[in-house]
Image (tube, rainbow, N blue to C red; front, side, top):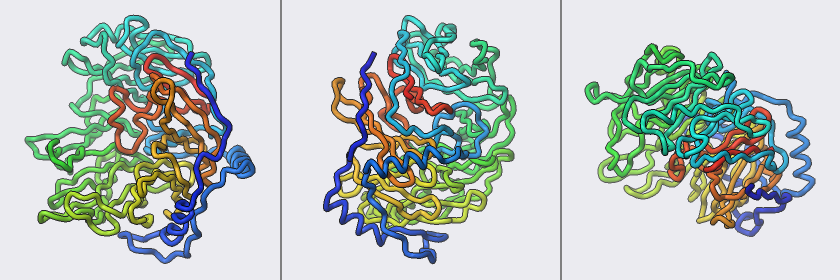
Length: 510
């Protein structure tokens, strides 16, 4: 078994003159803004605090988190494990907070090599691989023990899959069954297996009514493009995938991949309350187009509103490129998107300055607030943790963590961080971070739990890096280091435990 170690919480972040100076600089650079990014009338905000991580502060935060009642983090009816916790894309899992450094409850190595991103259903962890000689196929592990409950090996015997990993996706069906989408290596049509998780067998296969890249965000949708029609489509499908319910063709064709500003036509979507939030290039935009946030009714496919108030982030060569709305996130009852270039457009080919976060009303699209930018600060990634967005911010060659209040966009706290620190996910108001540090296998992961409300460090532990893709695929922007891993390598179950995969096995932390 690999050795997993934990360390008692310490003051992991240095306090120095630069941090103090930044705190003073930020004191006048936080607050709310109204529609269109214009400053709203609001009381002068207090300067953001720098958490001290003292034992007393840590104990107070833990006591508050332990006593807080459970609350829903997203209007998501899913009973199973979403890839990012919920359909809101906030990376919040509907689970209790992890208040102490988790330890290994079990670890299993049944002979796999390269395994699929796990999917939690009932008391089972679904994962597996066809890239091995023994125990090949889809396997269900018991959450309590890690022992294999059942395995479906036959899926590896068709389509040239034997000896390969493939790209696998799992989705929940209204029946409580699991849809497993598994392309064939032979070029034959993709299989859409419906699996009964209790019986451990394939009960039927589905045939989609449209040739689309399938997604599940509270309902099944798919994206495609038609060169004949000159547009890209979002298509709504029935739960059995056998009927097209609607098509929305209000989007441009894909950019040429050799374009230096290439971005996919569609960002990863979020969904909440029966509405799909999708960033995409609209077909009626003037050139050069940007990706704008669209709100689409999941029942009818109708576009409800579109965000068009992006600032010009780059100007030159006779054109003006606007800020890209990126991947939407629903948190605190608001739709959050990034904004670039608020301090004025950059020259052609230069990185814009003036990063911020913008919150929109999910019903009307009205801008509720825009956080105030700080010169030279770049917002790299962020995750919702209770009433706060915990963001990675790069400034002056250093990385910091900033806590933005979801209520008004003001900055509640900020703290220096290691250059490799990344925000991953959260549960119960606690954000989980990782940092690659030197280790026996080349690198290990320093994993930490941070109170979202105050920024206080609650605990620290170290996980071995060898064969462990612990930090891959968590970012707002897809992680190019992930290789064949489909989605993050771990989930948080409703019991508050972490269920994850190694390249050659699986584990539970609690």
